[in-house]
Amino acid sequence: MRLAVIGVGLIGGSIGLAARRRVGARVVGWDPDEAAMRAALAAGAIDQAARSVGEAVAGADVVFVAAPVGALPSLIDQALRASDPSCVVSDVGSTKRTVVQAIDDPRFVGGHPLAGAETAGVANAREDLFDGACWYLTPTASNPPETLARVRDLIASLGAQPVSIAADAHDELMARVSHLPHVLANVLVATAAAALERADGAGRSLALEGGPSFRDATRVAGANTAIWRDIYLTNADALIEAIDEVIASLLDVRQALAGGDGEKLSAWNERARAARERLG
Amino acid sequence: MRLAVIGVGLIGGSIGLAARRRVGARVVGWDPDEAAMRAALAAGAIDQAARSVGEAVAGADVVFVAAPVGALPSLIDQALRASDPSCVVSDVGSTKRTVVQAIDDPRFVGGHPLAGAETAGVANAREDLFDGACWYLTPTASNPPETLARVRDLIASLGAQPVSIAADAHDELMARVSHLPHVLANVLVATAAAALERADGAGRSLALEGGPSFRDATRVAGANTAIWRDIYLTNADALIEAIDEVIASLLDVRQALAGGDGEKLSAWNERARAARERLG
Image (cartoon, rainbow over all chains, first blue to last red; front, side, top):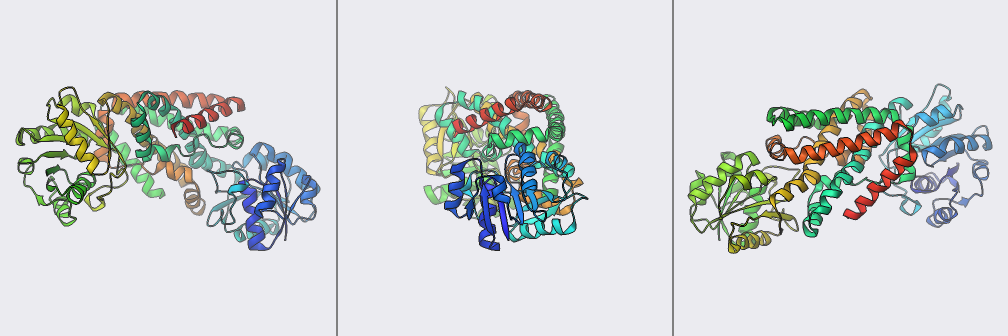
């Protein structure tokens, strides 16, 4: 198997490592950042650094494009044009509607592995990054079954669990379980910062160390801006809907707090407990 | 040292375990739940189960009242009346203004250890629960220095780091680093539940397993209702202020999303990153 990885950061690098070691694939990489390509070679994530997208995908059986969402349509288009007619192209973008709408080609299958949120760069790449992880695929009616099968089989060989889902459903789901938590982490850290900076030094640092709920809720605050700006922009409508639901819920809680309504607060907390247990 | 623990749940039980094993204290416990007292005896958290608050505090050097915030004023008052004039009384409530305002006694020092949020009950009590944890104390001008010193020294012997803070400042800080994260966890889990239940089974469970930001942000959703209702009610004003800040921030983000304003989203994300790095 010959593989091309366009973008050799955390995700692209981990694909390369897993594909080389577990599938015995030959992996050619390309990245606009030459230092990243040298690091990918040194880490064993790629066999060869290409000088262009076209050189990287020449002769490949499968191409993974692992770049910020805003850069995907152009890179996927280049990969489709330069590769063999039998080559399958996929991506790893965190939102799927934009790219699936932009690329109308039976050789393209959109994808999104749920892995690797907190670190970045090929230095953090790991062969086992995808082990057990959900890897969404968003095939369309235009994809021949064997095209989808090739991507699914390869993803499973990398350790992940492929799950097919419509691009719309994917983006709505991610708005709630990923993008909204990131928005709330950003909001929470900013809201806390002012109050914490008014507190004295010892009380402040100890409150943070000792407050697991704050630490957990803000772990992803200020995640990689280049990646997250594009995610927010390409899933804005679903995220706005989720934000509006949050604001409505907060106004409800606010009303119960202002009225000293212990029964309403109890019922609201019990509903949250039930929802968490149902989901968990 | 003779210690009384009023309420032998997770916190009261852990105080008892640490005081018996690390200070060699004799610990008498009382709890309205007789099964909890039997479990506390069996776990070695107390030497003796008392039949009343009065019996528990008779002869004690220090009393810790470890009950939901709404029950504190009455229990602390009983402990102060029934104990020796030399006995010092403290509590472990998560909000401090209400109790400090209700109890006007030089022998009372309010307290709040930052530990043990996710579990409850003496079955989860641990001798090392407070190791390295911040344990806020809210002394007032009426407390003699030796009263405060006795509580501080004992808390340090239990493994915690005592930090004195004004009750107002404590409640404002906790509104941001603890109570608000709990509110947002509740809101997030409810907002996600509907979308997740629309998704199919495999995609749903895998999204949750693979979405660390959601898991982290909702870990404390639906925390112990008896405890949290009282926390919310007794810190309602500070929490409402924090909620209003969150809503204002969300409306800002919403505007940037609706306008497709990538620059504003980037700047907002960078500010969150800076705040998180500043807070450590």
